[in-house]
Structures are given as structure tokens and as C-alpha cells.
Length: 282
Ligand code: PMP
Figure (cartoon, rainbow, N blue to C red):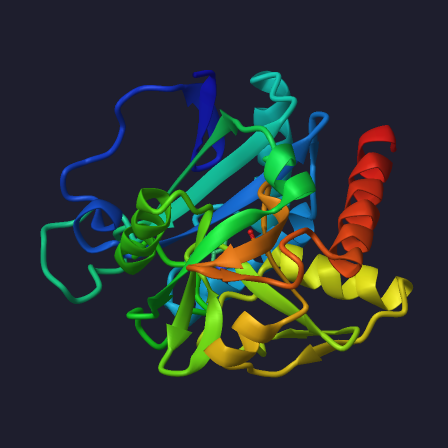
């Protein structure tokens, strides 16, 4: 289980959540999941920038300065000896008597972070996996990484019940993202993914794919696409922290492409693994 970060202090893991914590009662808070490979944190600065943005959008004051937080996260990973896994970090608006409106200014937000051992799903990454389609029933600020994940929980459960790794979400006819990952399709050699607006979370892995595709001379179009375009795509894949890149070879009952991970996604997986390798050996 290891130790946890509680605001700016690393302590033994114990029961610290108060029944009137606003994260617990309202989902009033934000979080980040940061990948750890070979004991190194992947794209930590980008995760912290997104955390800062989520906090700002919800008028939530960060209880710890980002420079200190960064040091503490690195320390937590080394204290717990985490090699492969993730750091889960959340900040709630704090502990206060239960009223919907923000509590008074003397209530300070509560930050907790812990480490979790997690392996990359290399079998799915190599051979591809199945996804299901489901309606996107979330609110209209999916760009904020909040603790409110009930629609995502229900969507993922539907995927698992259908032996799939992910549930791809559509708002009407438009594919937005998946329950816990971003979605890309390949059509005539070019990539398409939903623009980073209020309908999706701008994934850190998604941004890494953009950078890798630039190096590989592959064009990524930040354009919406429809359910029919997804089902007719040459290739489909999803991306997320530690899940990395999973080729999707079947969506509901429709086989994508020739039912195997395509050349483009395989090249991107290769480049992604290479960048992880660079981090680990750095
Ligand atoms: N969209 C949603 C809804 C997610 O929950 C996640 C994973 N946190 C992502 C996209 C992918 O984001 P990232 O690459 O930063 O993990």
C-alpha cells in the first residue's frame, strides 16, 4: 500500500477522508492520473498544467504550490519504490458542513495522492481489442478533469459486460471520446480525433500522439467524425495514461478494417514505446 501524499506531507496511508469532504459528498474536486514507467513519471509537467487548469475552471485554490507538488510526487514514487504504475492525485474543495454552495474562504482544499501498481495491457496493445458504443450522457464541461465520473463508470461497466476494453461515446451522431480514453480513427492514411473543446478531455496521451505523428509525418485532423465514419474507418484506436494505445479491431458487431491492428497504429505504438524507453533510460 505504501505511503500517501496529504497536502504537502508524505504520511502513512490511513483513513483520512472526512464524511463531509466535498469530494466525497458532491464529487466537488479534480484529479490526475500520471503514468510511471521504470520508476519515472511520464509527462508530469503536462499533467500538473492540466490540474492547474481544472482547478482554475472550478475556482478551486491549489493547496500546494506546483513546484512543491512536483517534488513531492517524485518523492512519493521513490519512497514507495513504484516501478510500473500510476500516481493518482485528487484535490477536493475541502471539508465543510454540507451546503451546495462553496464553503467560506477559511475552508482549504484537501489534496491526496497515492501510488498504484499497474501494468500496460500489452496483449491488447499488440493484438487489438473490442469496444462498444454508448450514448455520451455527460455534462457539457468534459474538458475539466472532475471527480464526477458516474456516466464514465456506467459506460465502462457496459464495456466490461460485453467483453470489451472500452465504451466509445457518441453525442447524437458525433463520436466524442471513450469512457476513460480518447478516440482516433484513420481514414485514407490520415488521423482524425475530436477537437479539444468542452466535449472531451484533452488527454495527455492524445497530445503525445500529436507530437509523435508530426515526427512520423502523419497528418492528424482535429475534426469531429460520425458513428458511421468510425465503423467504416480503416483503423481505430484509443489512448490514455498507462493504457497507452489500444488498437480497436471490433466495435459492437462491426469488424474494423481487416480485424487486425493496422500499419498506422502499429507505427504509432512503436514510436510511443520508443519515447517511453527514452524516458526510462534517461
Ligand atoms: N478522456 C477521458 C474521459 C479520460 O478519463 C481519460 C483518462 N483520464 C482520457 C480521455 C485520456 O487522458 P490521458 O491521456 O491524459 O490519460
